[in-house]
Image (cartoon, rainbow, N blue to C red; front, side):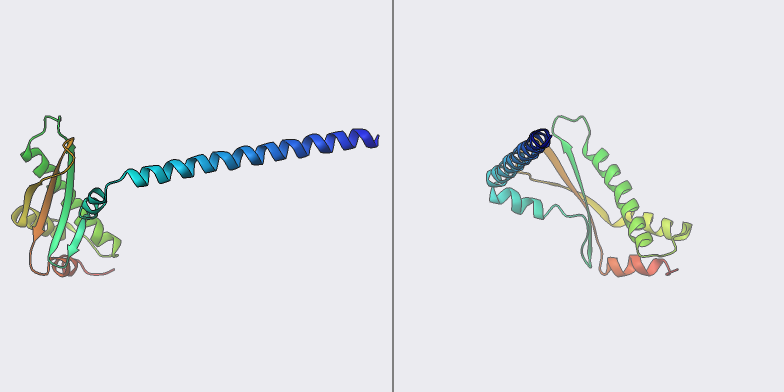
Length: 153
């Protein structure tokens, strides 16, 4: 009877050992491939991506980034309309996240700011597989102005 328990314990221990060894090897392989990808990134690409931030870049600039493939049939006007919609929704979401009351008057004011103060600029991108557009609203104290439109709850 002791030999059956001994065999059973040995089989379970071998199963656990093999499982641990296999899992450890799988993690190591994933870790190496992640490091290889990081090493393949060019420093200029990493730096370039740093400037792709959206939202309030400064107290005077609000930015939306539109990225589309080069082979897409969309035009600059399409990118501008898409950017306007996203800017409106992002500004509204910003106010809601700050626990502010957003009514129709606030929405209309935001829409007016987006329509009158926003401009689209095509950005030269190192990757020739995509078109990058910045939609920026440049206005003195825009962040404070947007936040002052809606009262807190």
